[in-house]
Length: 191
Image 1 (tube, helix red, strand yellow):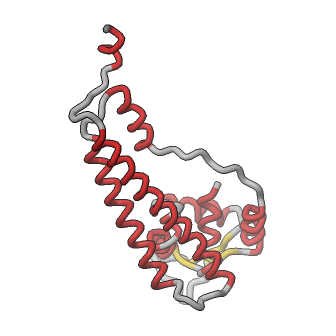
Image 2 (cartoon, one colour; image 1 turned 180 degrees about the horizontal axis):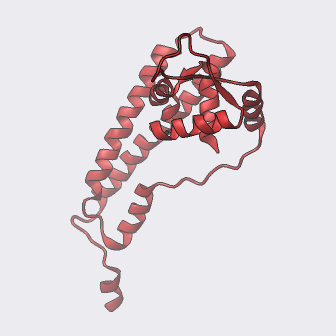
Image 3 (tube, helix red, strand yellow; image 1 turned 45 degrees about the horizontal axis):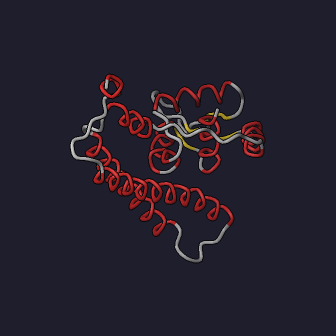
């Protein structure tokens, strides 16, 4: 249910076309709630059919002209209702953690290289978030909207900091494992 609310948020920040929304998702909201171009267009159609948004009138009607959308009062009310509603935290699901658990029973072949790759990807994302923080949130920028947006960015910075540190720890553990060790549960049962 969150994609419609992400779109309502983006449209309240700035009325946009579907293409503009896709680009904005790639640069901001997409860091914590991703959506494909097709998903965004599908949701725009649903939100318009539900009377939560409307296409802005075109200045000059033209075939193939992109529609820009704005949020209607019902859309603002729905976003306010959703924002105020209580939600339970979602359990974290990460295939990397499951793969590590599986490595305990089938061996670690190839996993260290992927841990290093993940470490590099998280380090790059962390650097990008810090760059955004420097650019978009200089000292003295203290409006309520800016503070809330910065809080979301700080969550990204803190998560990427966690992952880079945790992956450093995981890689150090891998170095301490016996070289080339593979665990075969069936072989140990046979002994």
